[in-house]
Amino acid sequence: MESSPQKNKITVYHQLTLGLLFCGFILPLIYEQCVQAENKGYAKLSSASSPHQTEPAKTEPAGKLDEVMQLAVDRAHAECYENDPFPSAAKCAKCHPDHYREWSVSPHAYAQLSPVFNAMSNKLIKLNNGTLGDFCIRCHTPVGMALSEPINMSNLDRPPSSREGVTCVSCHRINQAWGKGAGRQALVSGDINQVVYGPMGGENLAKVLANPDKYGVLKTNDDPAIRGREIHAEAYQFFQLITPGFCGSCHDVFAPNGFRLEDAFSEFKHSPAAKKCKENCQDCHMGAVPGEALGYTYSPAAVVGNVKTPVRKHTNHMMIGPDYPIIHRGLFPHNPAAVREEDTPPSPDTGLATMREWLCFDDAAGWGTPEFEKHVTDTDYFPPPWGDQIMRIKARQILNDQYELLGEAATQRLQILRAGYHLGEIEVEKAKWYDLKFSVPVSNITLGHGVPTGFDAERVVFLRTMVWDQNGRLVFQSGDLDPNGDIRDSHSLYVHNGEIPLDRQLFTLQSRFITRNVRGGEREQVLNVPYSLDPLPYFRPATRPFTVLGRPIGARKQKQNIEAKGSRLANYHVSRRQLTGPGNYTIRVQLIAGMVPVNLVHEISDVGFDYGMSARDIADGVVDGHMVLYEKVETVCIP
Image (cartoon, one colour):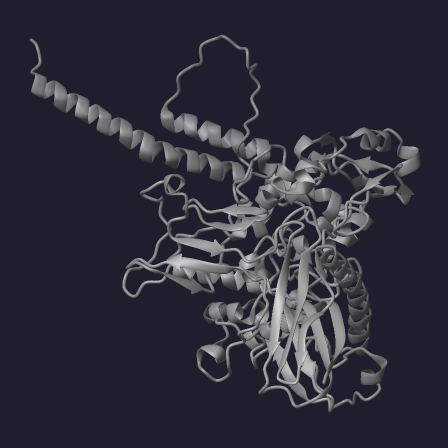
């Protein structure tokens, strides 16, 4: 019997519906489960049968097959993933002390510890009702997300490899070119014996393993019957590790709705450094001189059994940038001698105190210094374990080492910022008793990208300009800070409330977030989330392709940085009302770089900050880190 056309139409319709349901709903679920399984270390299955086996497989009941498969997964990976799927950098430090010391104070090492980042991530998740997911945090703690840790979680409760941020395995356990996926990439799981991926392969490692008389007995598996120093069994060369594309997987943050949050990698790809000089990110950021492609230093890659391996090119793992730490110095830089895990009993082989105990140590009061300790009496109270004077003195010795390393990082930070920015000479255009006009050029002297770059919408770079009259009286200033620590721009709360005037001559290189409101129109905002009075904002797949529109749909960034080899002129005018008469006037211009604006701290403060820090603590730390890159002084005679 022939079916009716109407019935055929219904059948085809049902088939199409089921097909679309399968492709659009079921397949993504299966894929997501596979991804989660791989992140947990259960993606690969070991099989005794050959891949070329041609015998037909025996059918088993579905439930039994699932049980067998799960058992195979568990047995194949139980030992490998039970306790240490992603080793802490402290384990790598035993053979790579120089690399570890550089990394321990780096922005990469601070990425997850930053209370500003964590509060901002939590605030964005709150504003988007949870739909943001791990979009921000997956770059800041790749290990934490691979372990499926909660996004909103105190660093005091994270394991070492998670709170280490961009730790050793974040780069050296990558074996595929993942592309610009805003940090969406899988790490190769395994204990310390697992293979690592580097720029040169395993030639030196093979020599070390083949010579136990020189380098000592080494252990390349977890067999308890074997005694020796644990080491990775193999090292493979990974071609992308030394290319800019490797950095671009995190340093080009491109949202699905077309919004560019960070585009350092894109700027580099179109820069003279990439096109003409054929340089890469590592040449400037891991070379001998921070910010300049002047070659590399040479030193042993490892120290095994107190014996150094052959000398080779050394890459600086400090990879310093414009950010700086503001948390307790006992917590950062990373130091195995400082921090002990809470589930580990005290011993000479562990850190001095837990993170929570370090937060009770009053560094500012000078605990542990000779000057402080000589005035301590029996009635003075100290929270445990700091009631023991020996503990306080040991802590002070650790902090002295921490401050020394932070000083080295600050020096390199100044170097790299001065390699990017330049402040020209003050040019006086008019000097009359009724009018004073002058200008100063600010230039980008690097070939690699704009300045500032990366998260430039929250990067504070500005000029502080002051003019004094012949009596030393301040008659003009621009770039000064309000009581919160903000420059007097439109985002200053004091300016917004009308308590202080807007700095109309302010020179700043901070880009701005522009959001499109649901009801139409645009507005400048501190955070890049569209604002609306009534609907709840969500991040959803866009209904229209932004590539056709040529612009992002919900938010955009108004870039105000200076392009590679570009310059901008800051113009100033001191009016007749401000001048006090003839005489010599002193002009001082400072180029200052900070981390984030204090108004961002206010904007994210309602979700709270880690380590028990207040918004005031955060703001003070941010302002204290402001660095003067250049200073120019000029004396002008007004007749």
